[in-house]
Image (cartoon, rainbow, N blue to C red):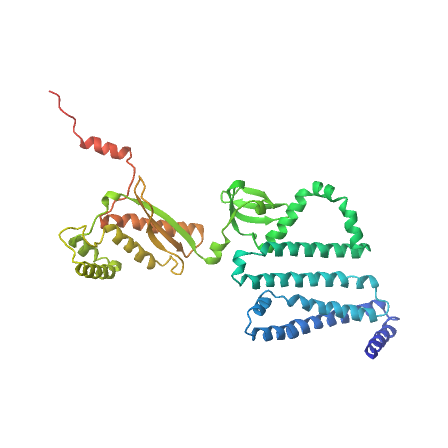
Length: 421
């Protein structure tokens, strides 16, 4: 206890030297010393002890301790150092207000609660590393434990300031529970929903969300306790109750922005009667297309070797394997997308056939543009399909289109009326 006596004598010396001159200087010096001591203790624990602990854990071969570092489980412990320092020094200062010392207890309880919350998240991440987590997910149970944890912390802090026993407070609230749930139903639902939204990172301000059942399709501009405001693309504003985002489904386009790729998924209808085998003359003509030359030469060699190996009779086109104009066109579009500067090569892209329909054979382009901006994205998509529609005739294909009045008009003019005798 020699250290305590020396600290006490130090503060008494400050009192004797300054209290007669100006008491405000004394308390200014005391507050300054306490703040500096708390700050230094935080730096010591945060950037020395915890950093050393992180380095030691990273050197191990285990993966679970890396999860503890990623979840920053030990970081809130650094805040205990200034709390302990403040409590220790303040008790040695003569005349220090005891009411301020009472703030240390709730601060420590809240800090420990955050440590436990991060520890639960880390434990869930470690559990999810194992295959059994796919069959028995525990995320919902962990969320319930977190909710109970913070409710318990709230009750403990309220009881501490009111000077009541937690058991007595809960027994008194039991009779009022039904009335509280009835009066504050929307508030409770919104509060719980807000916690779930923040904990699961479901929605952020600036996210583009789509919720047709609430007529919402646009950017989130405000997240409050009771409502979430969405500015639609037509500049109208939709107000959604916060709990609706938990009760009902919605689409968040944030993943598209994070991936930096916006999906292009559009099909054109090919007239199925225009699909045919390629003759030699057409193949030679298509070889002049630069991005197709290597593909056609490779395909010709492959088909020739296959037909020879199986003694295929070339006099009938349906015998053996042949190149078709539609298959060659698909190969062309695939190479075209590979060489397109605004199409992502590291994300899924393909040209595929869908099931035939009475209107034609759908040929779909599935790719991702490198620009997620709506206006520029639409421009990229339009340029691609402009090119597709313009080059389809080169392959002897036709795009299906329902006949219009103009088509019937041309047909009528070409058909001569019969002469009556």
